[in-house]
Length: 392
Image (cartoon, rainbow, N blue to C red):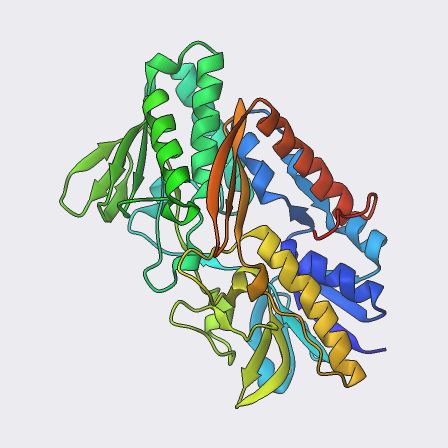
């Protein structure tokens, strides 16, 4: 039985482990957390609509459901050419036939970033955001700023959707409490049209929502630094804020950039359409999937969970075909699209974009329930309690 070592317990890693176990491989999954975190539904932790544990799935439960070996530890070194991975504990893993790198990305560093919290950072920050908002509500008034940044070296590394979602959910929470008028909510981003990858219709609808919800915009100004009481822009103007939520763009994981794996300018592992990694001009036994991988494609491409899941499924298929001596492979690029239900707390907007079309349409009330339902679906399909929908 051939052995596969998977680094990372997120969407890409967990799905790859499940598919490869089902195919009969001896799979070991390494994760620095003992739970799988459902990031898309973490937006409700700060508003008390969900508890932290609602967004977590115990990796031991996933291990029992799929049969992989589980190692809870951090990765400190990848020596792909030597077929060796070193863990934080000092343990060395070198007995594997295939390596699947799915350890995600790191965030770009901005001066004063310690003065912000991010809904897309380590899971514990969702609780810190909740506590910061609770303090502001107890105070009775305040200024709140939400924003996200870009990576000029890789346009796919921007993750702005959760920032919009959290902002709209906070607006809705304050409105329900009857205190929305006591708070000034602002949105900021260095790009002139944040969210442009969603398409023109989505941009127009977002602009409408900003006006309707009285959210101030600060766009097209590069961020100089974050301060305790706000955001300083490159022209030295300042956005005053009692609390700042900021999502930095992704960048290559430090373990990846320090390894012998090939990377693009932003530090993501370069792969072909089949997620194979080429080392010394030859296809190696290494695959990279999810946020770790450098996505090729149109400028609007984005690192999303469903893309990571497609890559994971394809890698399991491609490894099997490779072992059969077959040339058949499945690629991820034909599946590149933007697909999300952007929750607002009292509804949602359904967003879709591919090479042929881009649209967004509002779903009052039912959209919020759909996103809630997706969270339940995600948890239970990962645990194998219900079947996946066709094509997902």
